[in-house]
Image 1 (spheres, rainbow, N blue to C red):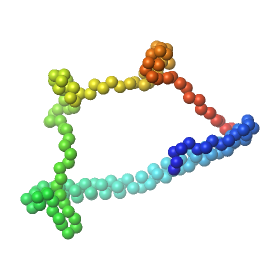
Image 2: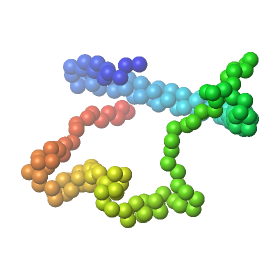
Image 3: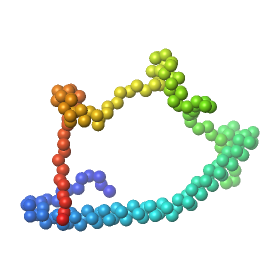
Image 4: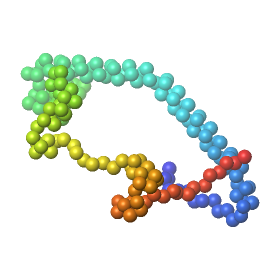
Length: 170
């Protein structure tokens, strides 16, 4: 499906605009009804399969856990690549990517507090201090006149209202 904007219907007079409003009403009502129908159908399909999917995921995880336990218990029977070729496939113990975990009884909040006690040059290696722009606050300040036009131009922003058409077919 194309994401390009559709070519506008060419209208040349107010009577033409008036004539097309009932069609707009019908098209938008049909669209809303179809979207509701599609959402309901999708929800029904998902609901019908939720239990079955959960059971299959649980069984798959149980089988993988069992294979892992067996391979871990029989490491000495695996090849140099930590694998074993069987009639129905290959099993292999692999290392996942490294990940950072906290030690017992240590939370990430405690890690951050401890990191902030380190010298600044070490903190700079992994403590984020990136400034970020609060666009809503900036827009509010401009709207309320606390940011001058000169400051706004210096920032490189404009405060605009985009025009759009509102149609309420009767």
